[in-house]
Amino acid sequence: MEFFLPFDLPILDFIERYLHNPVTDAVFPFVTYIGELGACWIFLGLSLLFIKKYRRAGALILLSLIAATLLGEVLIKNIVCRPRPFQYISSGFPLLIPPPSGYSFPSGHTCASFAAATALFLQHKRQGALCFLLAALIGFSRVFLWVHFPSDVLAGALLGALTGVSVTLLYEKALLPRIKSLP
Image (tube, rainbow, N blue to C red):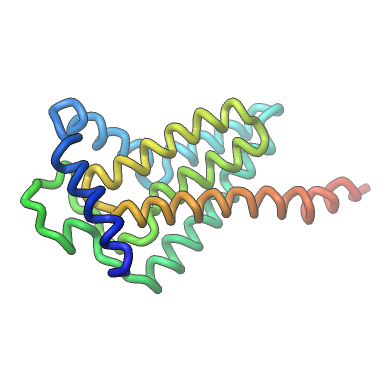
């Protein structure tokens, strides 16, 4: 993953020099905790299951989260084994959250966030667009807090979006026709 460092390091340096202040140092740890273990997205998906108009979106969010977790957290992270920025580079800047365990690539917070936002967006554009904003903030918070490289977050966003699209297409093309054909 060394070939991403010329892209990653200037962004990390810029954030550390110019974006840290008492407000952002308080806000972004909170934003990152919103995405912890995909809890906000799981809660959203489960909540939508109880509203008939949004039931399909809720199911697709939950299925997308499962698929994204299996692909990103279980498969890719354990193949790539990329250390986190705070482990790789000594910035002298103290971490604002407890150091996470596990590997860095791709960002699991970002992957889950974009999987859920994409699944919702494909069913309900306006609500999905708002979720993309939260997903982007969660992704940025991971870089801001020095627990992910920018390339980890971009890969997580791409993997999450592709997972959300794939799960939705599989549902619409494979599962939905079978459900409709049942007596």
